[in-house]
Image (cartoon, rainbow, N blue to C red; front, side, top):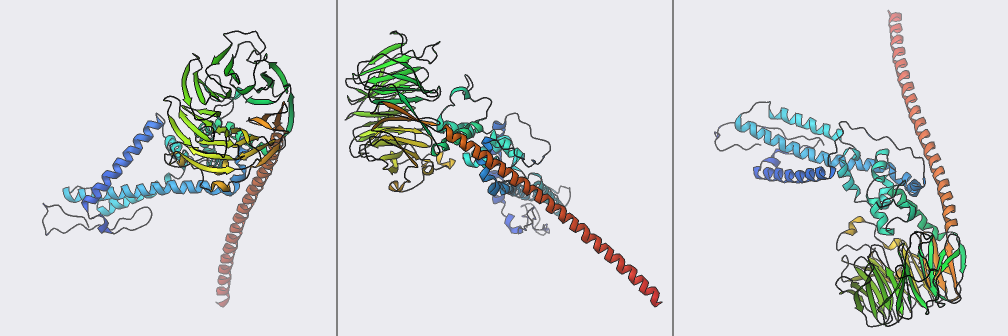
Length: 632
């Protein structure tokens, strides 16, 4: 019942209003709106909330115009290509009900807001008419009009594609790569929206960094002739080939053991160094040594490179560097005469250089003098010296931090301030020889003298400074080197074996885990992690290993560089996916034909039943007329 104002007479008969009936068909009691203060507070809160949403949508949508009419998306008839095949196996059991669920959820929200605003509008309008005696119809008539509008609203916005583009993009931001790929298989409209979503670029960068080689457009960092979704799916597809067939290629040239290997996959080159003090550059496509340096006078224990700089470290404590030269076929002129502009040395360590790494602006070097040096790539000045309590065996930088192994411990330093961020004490029983890190820097892997591999989550999302995720014991000898290329962790050991570990099952794919204080790994017992998915057997002790998109490179004490080439498995997997896509398309075509036949048969049955009924009714009438005439 509507409350009266103070200036109204007490004997005035109150206006009776029937309980509100909204689009959902529910009848709400009239006493639910008697409290004026509650209605005012609710109205103000909802207005502020909707205002914030409108401002957010307006700012993100820019000058985009809202479509005047809504055209429901047509069903997607898929002509299967390789990116679509990645999600094809999930389409049949999942995609059919997904669009209905999305439409139902969006329609439910719109219905809720329609009911809420409708009720508030009716109450305020009726209250205004009671106070000031305004005309325009009775409360029942106004209530009926608003109810009709709400019911029409429910039938109008029935698809997620009818929402503003900025709002749809915000909704899709809550999905991971697999869910976004499945969503793109639902309909033509969702295929376009999901395939062009910016999240594919983020997914690719989190796993593999920037695109390599010809896939990247010059100067922009974005791919051309191929979308980010297709680029992501192709790389994810390649990662599965490490469980397939392979060919072993042998690169012979070193006279003694190979201590360090480095694979520069973007230009399909490999660099190796060892006890013979010579650095060699290999073409991994042809399997040929295309350049070799003069003897540097000591054992080469570390090699690192990118497309602009090649650095090697020796037991004499120096860092020998080559700059890339224009006009040289393979970037680095290792055979040329000594030139200070293109070839130089850095001196800063008092012991053998055991590990090296590069990023865009700095050079990192670790040594048995128990220090890590940080150098500026342009000025070649020594910026920081990070002191440890034991020999430094390995390091890997990320952003403004660098992770190092010294003795049995693992250190993480802030390279700008020189402060120690995280210390993992006694990570291994004995020396910790190897360390690797994910592209995002959130996951750290260590290998040691005890033959174990540990996985840690580090950063602000875990408390305390790190979280022990998993432990593997794939080797009987000590682990000399680790390499990580999502999702594969590769280890090389003195027992002559290489272990391949897929870490995808340990990761939490929920995008909400990107928020602070949420771990990005599934909670398991670290000692009960799955064993390595594959073991590759080398010959003799292995010192170093590296991994690319479809190759694994290793070097050992016999002086031979071995390449496990999985391109054959890639071709086999492509053919298998193509056949699965053809079978799936044929099955969907048969299903559509069956549905068409069923619909036609149902129409025919309905027509035949109607015809029989009409004939029966006409016949019975004629028969009654005849019987009537005969009786008369």
